[in-house]
Length: 369
Image (tube, rainbow, N blue to C red; front, side):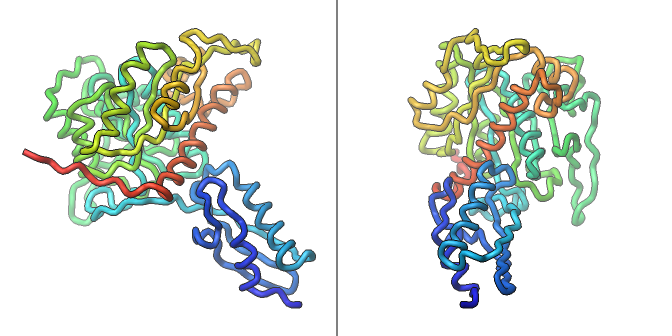
């Protein structure tokens, strides 16, 4: 019996995406089906280039076709990706940006910017188009971490309008409050001025097409956070903490702020930074310097995912100081940290895809007087 396109589609309808809980056909993840005798080929469109289950899904497709269509079928699967988006606004602002993700923390000193930089670079390593805004007005450290100190963004004309051109490094488009100030001078800005700078980075910059735009917010809660949710619909927020009790107490305010009814930004999950120390010479040993599983307990309490646990090692500080994010480090001694950030990027991308499949779009917060 000849293999038909309809039979292939029916077989693939029995294959579910493990994260989204729906079959590939319903999710429109299959196209370009071609049949030539016993040879069947098609394109499998994943929801993120960082999908760690791509081989599992591919093998499930092959098994389904051999089982339901023809056991002698020769199946070729081309894997590609198309990052999902649930933006339902008019897209007058950031029209070609699919997902806007806030990186927040309850207090300073938890490594929020380190997580933001390595998450951004980790997503880009997986093939995503990524942008990063450093909105931490009190300590803009991303120019140092990205080896961009002293950089000044250029201005260009696009469709008759003057636009700021983000600086590109490590495959990331970046703008930072630090680009506007002298690194040797203290930044003393009132809230409205700082909020205006962030809004300009969002509305007056030429970001182009992005799968993810990460925004590194100042610690705590304040004007910058409100400006963000009033300017664009934020896909989700990632909250960074450390395991100790004092950090947990502060991070509660960050989580509850995003969950307030008038803001209602989904919390994608919690990242526990400085989770443990592993000496390079003892890769299987963990020392819980700041306590154990504080972020994990917090995630369970607020019913949000624990996205990752990042160890504390000297190489993270060295990478931040030298401007080479640790996720790009190829030294075997630092592999445990680079792998942790790679896994965080994969997990965050998967959770964004699940958020887009299962949760209503975020609405911008309306300004009331």
